[in-house]
Length: 397
Ligand SMILES: Cc1cc2nc3c(=O)[nH]c(=O)nc-3n(C[C@H](O)[C@H](O)[C@H](O)COP(=O)(O)OP(=O)(O)OC[C@H]3O[C@@H](n4cnc5c(N)ncnc54)[C@H](O)[C@@H]3O)c2cc1C
Image (cartoon, rainbow, N blue to C red):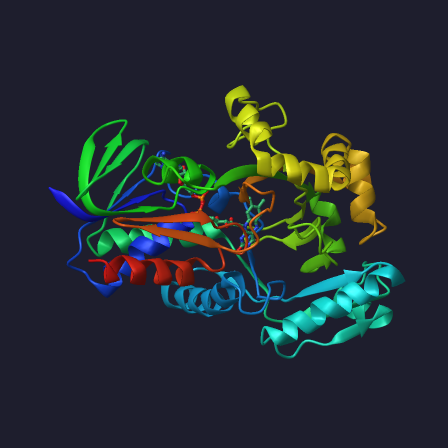
């Protein structure tokens, strides 16, 4: 049997894409192939669970557009299918006067991206939202929420299957040959399809390379490690508390997040992972690490961010240093209040000339669509990214 579309990757982006296609054209034969025994085992199931409002992203960028549109689609989806979520809002906090200009820039960016009803707060007003926070100024973003993206992804998968889509688990895509049709060779079988859609997250560059040898980006894995607040200290955080991010660094800085499944997480940091799916410090793949180190773009990134990178690495090994970073936001937190909270690994594309690719990146070739950079806020944006990729795919057949 020949498929109309084969999608590689049962993360939230691949599932949202499959769901969008089948909803637009139920006659299409679609197969999603996932190498793990369940969906959402990687980025989708190991993230902060925040429904981002669109605050941070460059106006007009794919991140800004998809986050804002995706936010609305996601909330409607959760309401329609009974997926629990909570629009609890978040505060962004400047912990000293030097951060205030950056805080104001961020506030303006939020306004440019159409956020409403958010206002600057002074020290006393911040404490009305979060009584234990330390800050000289900040603002509250009412739109921000929390959800469990694993639950969302499982729901996308259920509906996709109910509508006639096929999902194969425990099957790894090993090779793809693109001629008049696409041949997909997996660990178990060989399939034919009219088109292939690559949503392979941490391996999206490897999958793309099979049909796009000229690909100019490589995925660099950045692990984000979390601590959890001990139950008896959860009262220190009501909802979500974020620092002012370093505008030169593509991650948001360690923050506090109340989780939909219960508990409060602190993190994630951002350290180079020595293996793409390396969730522990001790996980190393010498082949993957040497590929990262040899990538000219990575060498430039390392030169640019070495100081921040070393600081993050130090915080990864030293719980005392991690605690110190958190104490900037909540001085009452002590090292003994934190227990290990697991980790996620971000798939961040890096181009050959040394830029961490800032925006989402979708590369089209005849018969093939590669989603090559879908880091945060791609979970929030998933239905919007899925809508755009589905439109491209259906336009081609
Ligand atoms: C620490 C962390 C915190 C984050 N916080 C947030 C947040 O709060 N809010 C937000 O919106 N976003 C957040 N994100 C980003 C978000 O999780 C990702 O952008 C999103 O999950 C990407 O989804 P995906 O489907 O592209 O990738 P993934 O979820 O990684 O899915 C890719 C899938 O492809 C499969 N695959 C790979 N290679 C093959 C192969 N050869 N054959 C078959 N299958 C294959 C993998 O097994 C995997 O299941 C965070 C990410 C991390 C890591």
